[in-house]
Length: 343
Image 1 (cartoon, helix red, strand yellow):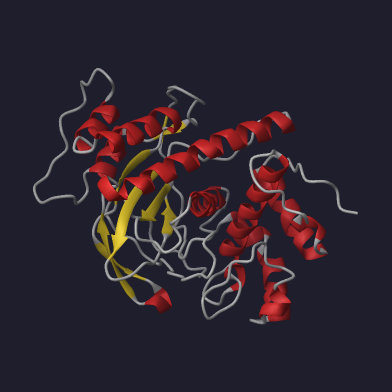
Image 2 (image 1 turned 180 degrees about the vertical axis):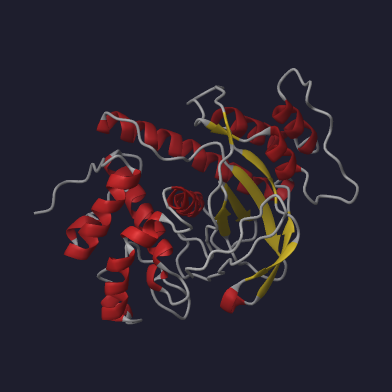
C-alpha cells in the first residue's frame, strides 16, 4: 500500500499494518513503515561497538517499558540513577526474571536498543482481518524471543563491522539504538513483526519467529524498512522513487504468475495461497526492496564466512535484477558488494 497513515508510537496508534501468512520461515508476515522518525541525538558509548549517533531517550524508554502492562502502573523515579536512568528502568521492569534482565540490559549496553512492549490495540490486518494485539514482556517462556532478537542485533554488529572493514569505509545505515516492542496476537499468529519510527514490534507467537535464522532475517527485513523510510523524501520511501519503475514493469509483465515472478523474486518466500512475498498483491515496492535487502544480507554473510554461500548472486540473474541490486547497494551499503562479478 502506498498510502501512509500518521505515525503515532507515542499515542499508541498503529495503522495500516498488513498481516501476511508465509510458507517460508524466513520472512515477516507483515511489515510496514509509516515514516521513520528521529530519536534523541547524542551519542553515548558502552561496551562493544559504539551506538549510532541517535539514542533512545529516557522518555522513549519509559514509553517502551511502561505502556500498558498494568492499570495504574507507573515508571520508577530513575533520573538520578548512578547507572543511568534507562538501566534503572530496565532493572525495575525485568526484576522478576534475572536471566531476561541480563539479556535486556546487555542488549542496551551493546547496541543502545531498548526492549519493551506494545500498547494493547486492534490492528487492521488487511485481508487477514482485525487483529487484537496485547503487550507481552519477553520473560519466562517468552525469554527465548528476547535472546533471539538480542543475538540478531549482535550479528548485525559483526556483519556491518566486517562489511566496513572489507569495503574500507563506513556505511550510512542504522541498525542500532532501536525501540523494540514485544506483543502477542490473540487467537492468531500474525503479524510476525512490523516496523515504524525506528521501532520494531515483534510477535512472541509469530508463526515465523521460531528459529535463530528466521528471526535474524525477519529483523533485518524490518530494520531495512526503517532505513528505507529515512532515506525517502516528501512522504515517500526511497524505494518508492528509485525501485518503483522496475517493480511496476515486472508486475505488469508477470501479473501474479508465480513461474514468471520466480525470475525476479529476491528470495523464495511465498504467501500462503498467493505468490512470492515481494510481489504479493496488497504488498508494494517497499516489500520488494526489503526482500532485496535480505538477499544482500544473505549473500554478503556467505562471502564473509558468516553463513551459507549463495551460489548465484542476484545481480547476475537478469538486467532488471541487476539494476535494482546496484541502486540499493549504492544507497544503503556504501556500494560494497563482496560477491564475485557476473560472467
